[in-house]
Image 1: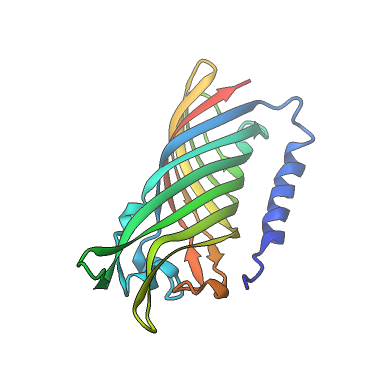
Image 2: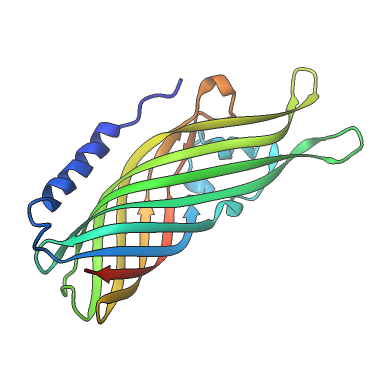
Length: 234
């Protein structure tokens, strides 16, 4: 069974930001921030030995870099004075890596193939510090909390190690993980929009159900987002 994630901590962080946003929302400067870029998952060196991708490499051949993929985000931002900004956002990432067995093939010599797929839908609550304010050139640093909805699947042909028979199946794990966010970037004001670039580090570990016999009990959802941003004021 999946162990419960620390959803109460993430919910508290989201409620805190909502509480900060609610009173001044009518008068404070607001904007919608759209971002597009790439997500680079954590490398092998940073993953625990319980991670399913680490353990899959013992018997499958695939490239972890295949999980590098596009990410999309949208965030509602509200100014809290001249130098602080709070936000609530959501995003999307999905990528598939092809894999083959290291030591087994079909009877005709062809490869035994699978697709390993990871999807993450992150929800975030953030606070940014803008030391120069929200005019002209706007460097910023921020922290926050992320709630990561994830889906991990393995689809294709599998080898039963008891009798080495080959069968086709689809194993899927879904859940929610939470973790901290650290971000930084710079924006450039042009009339009523800001153009910029942001780097965002997310962390979180998803639990995988024991009854599906994945090779690991967790999947690390952490990594870096490299994003181009468009911030529209209203």
